[in-house]
Length: 120
Image 1: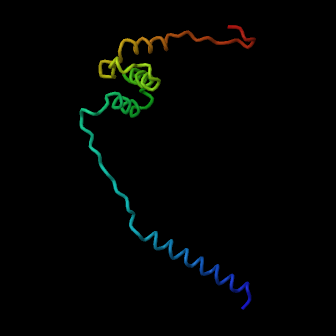
Image 2: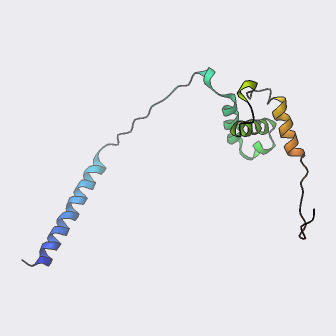
Image 3: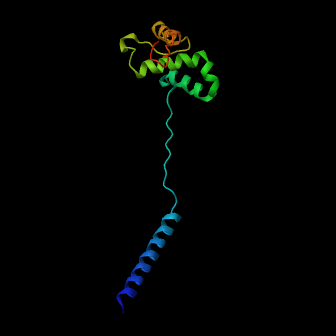
């Protein structure tokens, strides 16, 4: 036999083997295990619950006062501006006075727009 014929037979055998193994793999049932974890009610973070609610209401969250408070609290936690000793946590009554002041100062900050020549 010629070497070209042997190479073709080898390539065809490889393709047939790959197809057979693929067919066997597709016929096997999926081995997924779903584990349901129940979290006790006292371990649920009220901030996370409020952020989920804000996410679910969509565009209306931009004008919702509770969502604005929750976002301010989340920002302060992310940037670690709230110290652990403060013990301040988000609840239904709103953020602590310092966080509320920060929220108000953010929205009341004057916007400075630069003119094309660079002066303010």
